[in-house]
Every structure is written in structure tokens, then in C-alpha cells.
Length: 363
Image (cartoon, rainbow, N blue to C red; front, side, top):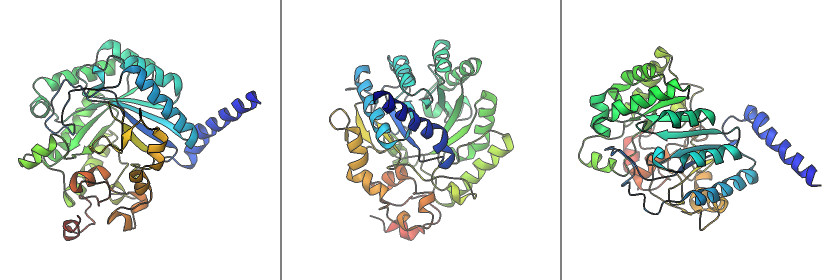
């Protein structure tokens, strides 16, 4: 009986890994981001984290317990793992190598990535990434030293580019990501040129979310999220320069389906993704301050499946967006909603289909 149960589990796992992706390329994954440290060696002026003190951070043994819960939830839902390690700056975490090895030993074929500013990359860490098939996201916020360092601090650009060269020389897959905002939108063509020269596989963009330090930028009028047609034009430019340079860009997520048929995918917030903070906090996303619980005190599966916020998101109880004919293809950017309205259930404030007067009435 035990042998049969083992064979049955392996058969189901094989179906999930090999067959189900061909049927549904999105919802078979349960994506998790582990913020393994809050410490960071930079002080970016738009960072969504309000501090980098790292007080109360989980130790390695506690992260192993978190992995136990995640593995149990995967088996319960019959979904595939997709894991990202983030921070702060994850390369400052002393047990990063051990945790990466533990994750790879459990999930041999999963997509495993690290989000880094690239300044601390060494040959030894690059060799580790290569040996464990870990991809790396490198944050770039300006296409040259002057603009990048203005946001991230003196000398950051040179160190990041040195990190990219080390990754490339060790044949580690890495891609670049920039924050897309009113300040950076004019730099889109140069970002693609930078990615091409650095040897990145992709040049991606994430919309500015005015949480943490970014609130100060917004209040001072120094930067802001793109609004309406500004964002539409920016996404069109991103697609154009991606095609012109041959450097791919991420076109999944909210609003991309409005740019071109076949692009975009439903925002998975509340559906097939969540974040575990550096102190074990269960969060809907990393870029919003709301905490739904702590996985050291409450079961991860209960928080994901039963918390009222998660259930409400899955039920589509989203103001304005919930009634949109494109809701099943989009669901709007929940981070942007939280930053604008203080909750995840408002409309996407930068959607150009929503009249400004309708947005102004949202509470």
C-alpha cells in the first residue's frame, strides 16, 4: 500500500509538471516570495520598505519550517512551486546558500530566482547560482551612473555592472528590472540598450508603488506613478523597444492585454501567489504594508485559503475593476490600488479605461 501511494504521488506530480502546463500556463503555479532579510546595503529613494533594520528576522531553522508549510500547501492544492528570494538585499543573508540548496533539494525542477541590486555578486555566489540553476533579477534604476546613482547612491552603478559581468562570465541567467515612473519613463530606450550591453536576457519594468520612502518622493513632487494614457504610451514604448532590440520584456499582468491582443495575464494576487516577510509575516504582496498573519503562529494554508482578504480577492469583489469586461484577463494592479486607496479592493488608478471622475469618487 505504501509503495502504491508513493507511486500515485509521483504520477500526480509528473502530470502537474509535464501535462498541466500545456493545459493552463498560469494557474498551475503557486508563486511565493520569501523576503529573507530586511537588511540592505543601499538606500534607494523610492524603496517601498520604510526601513532596513532587520530586527526580528527569521533564522535559517525557521525558514525551513516555512518551507515545510509551503510544501504541504503545494501538495494540498496540487500546484507547482515557483520561488523567489528577496529582501532587503538577499545577498546579505548569511544563510542564503544553505536556503537555496534546501529549496532545490525539495523542488528539483522549480523556477528559483533571487532579486538583487547586483552590487555584492562575487564569483563564488555566481558559481552557486549556476550550480543550482538560479536566475537573478538585477535592479537598475538609471541607464548610466549619474542617473542610477542619483536614486541608489554613489558608486552603485559601477558595482551593479561589475556584478552583471560576473554573472555573465559564469553563464548565470539574469535579467534587469527598472521602476517605471514619471521620472524614468523617458529612459526606456536607454534601459534596453543597457540590458543588451550587459548581457541580460530580459529588460523588465515594475510600476512605481508609493509605499515606504516613495511616499516622500510623491509628497515632494519629485516622482509619481504614471497615470492613464501616460502609462499606456509607456507600455507601448516598452513593447516597441523590446522588439527593436530583440531584448524580451515581461508583458504579463494587468493592462497589457489592452496594448495588444494575446499579451497580459490575470494578476495572481490572492489567487496563486503571496509573500512571506522577513519576520514570517503572511502578506498579499511585498509592496503593500498590510499583514494578514504570521506563519510561525498560524498555518500558511489557512491564511492563504481562508483569510477574508484572500477570499474577497478571489471572489472578485473589486470596485470598478470587478465589473469590467476584461476582469478575468487583468484584475488590475492590486499594489497600485493599495497605494492609492489604502486597500486591495479599489480600481487600478492608472487604468486608462476608467474616467478620472469615476476614480475621484472611490473611497
